[in-house]
Length: 244
Image (tube, rainbow, N blue to C red; front, top):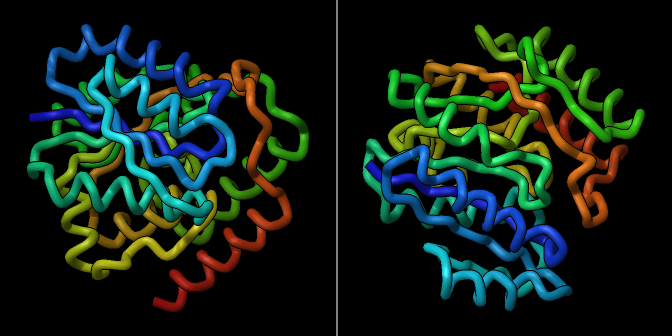
């Protein structure tokens, strides 16, 4: 069993090194081999050279998009890299690259994967979870999406459909790619976590949530999320999946 940690990165020069350092400090509690996969999505700042420099000190693989293709494309590149070289029992953790996802939760998610769950979501909406430093419009978007998704696409035990902080058993992702095809991730933006969850839902993947306190106050870089564009993207993905 190996652990892969996927970090999609776009203009994260202010946050990347601190995050990698914090991840490495928490890996002693995991006690399994790990590798960090940084996907630089066409950054225009120093994200890529920083990632390359860090790879000389930490177990990091750096993948690069020459042009910015979007969060979803970066996640897809990372998934494809690990699916091509990983084993069925390996674990893949996805997290944002901006320090809003504290690495403290990685050992907790891995424990749940070892108990037999195929997907573990770090959830703001479980008891003990929450979010710090969120602006009002982001809170409204998040709560509205949660209510709508739980109504239209209920997943037992799941409250946070849009959290990108997750742990997957690699066998579940392989199953999804075989079922949906090579281009099974169609989203390019921040709707990818929702899309992946709803596609795994159809395959009866076992899901567990643990409480997460999202630390938006620890983020140094600017937000890349465009609220209206993201809302429209959510509706588009939901309509597409509802037709299937």
